Length: 228
Image (cartoon, rainbow, N blue to C red; front, top):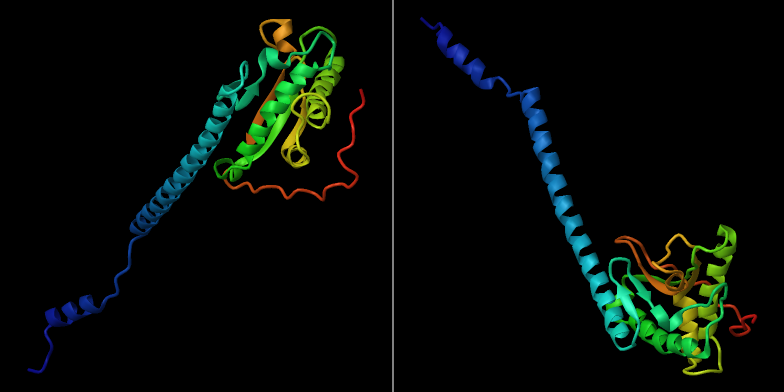
């Protein structure tokens, strides 16, 4: 009498034994948690990327609308490029634009400036790069220099006070802030030599997490002039 039953003692010991999760169960739980976190992150990134692309598309739609109001100007949506075609074609081994061609550019650029300043584009647009091209005649370095001179000549046309459709000082300041000169040789030639001697404006956009670059202090002394 007074002795505990072995069965009763064993049952109590088993009840008080702490529960230890197995290593495999722990790894399974961690893997499930990892997959959940990755799924949430993927959904967030995909959503941001889609919204960013939508803003770029809406901005490029404004460029298409602007080009539609100017004969001969077209937009390549695959490259985000504005091609002026015959309206801004250079002669052989020349970086000179006619007065009429300069007028075409000065009539179109204010529309690009309005686009860049719109609520649609302001959050995603990075800059507009003016690119001059050459045909395949001549050597590489000569053509590289010529293509750079052609793109520079387009910017020079924006700052001229004579000729048709001159820009206002406010528009010239916007050109200085938004536009960039870029030179290319014959590595993007067209079907014919004449078509290759062209000028394009490439619209560049910010990345998803890329911030606008703060503009440097503007130099004093006006805009200057281009050498003829």
